[in-house]
Image 1 (cartoon, rainbow over the protein chains, first blue to last red):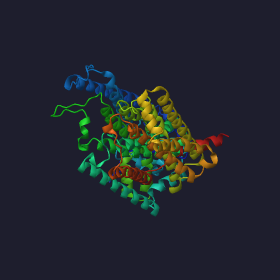
Image 2 (image 1 turned 90 degrees about the horizontal axis):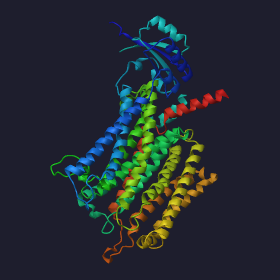
Image 3 (image 1 turned 90 degrees about the vertical axis):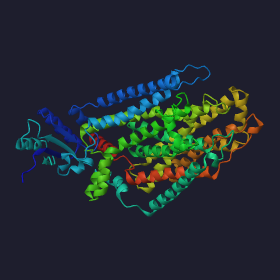
Image 4 (image 1 turned 45 degrees about the vertical axis):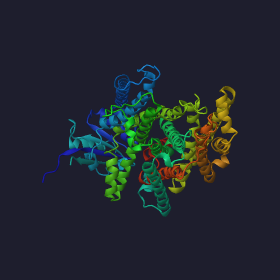
Length: 179
Length: 440
């Protein structure tokens, strides 16, 4: 029976500072395929990884615009064309009274899009991920910090990379298998 | 640091104690009463209620406006804590969100049931149908439908987004203890969260964005309810100040409930360390502030009503304040505006035995104000045939008691199945506090 191919190497740290330093060191060494894991948000590490959260906002904004347009359009089409009701001679296209639902639907769409967009950008939901095979990884949701260097990165070399990670003073370095 | 996660997670994972089981049993019994009251309306129609002409609205709208007020103040509080990154948010925003969600679930019963034919509620949706019937977008009822729906969905999203990382912690803890089925259930709900720093970054952006969007939604949800009143010709209701009045007087109810819940949670789940005395202190002072704001709203009502409004409005207000409606009116002022003022005294606000009744009575006071507006606003009508009174029937009392039981049951189950205090935020906060100490 052959071993499953290696997925990468995982280094475990006891604090957010140590992990952030390790992320900076890995980025400085030219690593592009890397992930860091923490039990709570670490904005400095996210900055070191060069990620921006702005797309979540853009997705929500676009969804709000689309939702508002659909809601206002539907209100106008229903009131003017499909079911015109003459209320004391008031205009059929009484747009101010269409605004409450437009406003509510825009907020509704923006909130749903913020959640769905956040999950889609994160590649979630997924039932499993090779990172969960790493030793002691369940503590990533409690009190440990991890840096993962992927085998798909051109810099990857099992021996060389393990030596690099040990140089960052982790608690432990372990190999992660892909299945 | 696992001494932070452990007590909170254990509260959800350890077997229930008899006190908890008894409370759940009582909650379930109350929900059975709710089911019977709902069935009575479905089978016999709204005739089982005490409503009549002119009292077309009774308990249905009183309780609806009251629950929405509780939900609003609770989620307003949670959203502001998230946005301000306030220290208190780690302790109380999770169950403030849960209380808001449970209150909206209770509120949602009333507008649907009071339609008369509740099973046709979907007629307020705009969809192509064989009757070629379309909703009127100028109708406050249609606004209300969208308002409630957005409120339910957005509050659930707000609560769920904050919960995802904690569900992942629950998954890992349940798995470590060999409880595979619990781990699978939490794991499915955690959506495969693995704590990637990149994911956290986007998660925080989405959480704060939804918190920011909750604020304009809340003002609107309560305002629409009040607009429905204000667009009628009933003298006590037909006032431009009504939306403001309902929003402001709603605050003591929701904050009072959150305060009482915080005190109960501290005792029942032994979370004194996470909901500490400073948290309780701040929360109690907020309730006192809300009471003050409500007091100003009542004073404004009297001032505007007696000095500026026309004769019919003045007569209606006089009947509410000095006539047969006086007990409800002054009860509301006393319980929701005056009583919370005792929380300014630090000796009183640190005592659980004081804080819980004051919080709950503030909510009860707001209920009396809703009664005063909805029922006693019609005390003085101008046609002799319309001088009938309004007495709630057992079916209405059952509905009110039943929705309160549902609220309690939902909160009990939340407290039991999901972490009552946000674990990842507590971890974050304590690590920051440690870092500050090291610097010193």
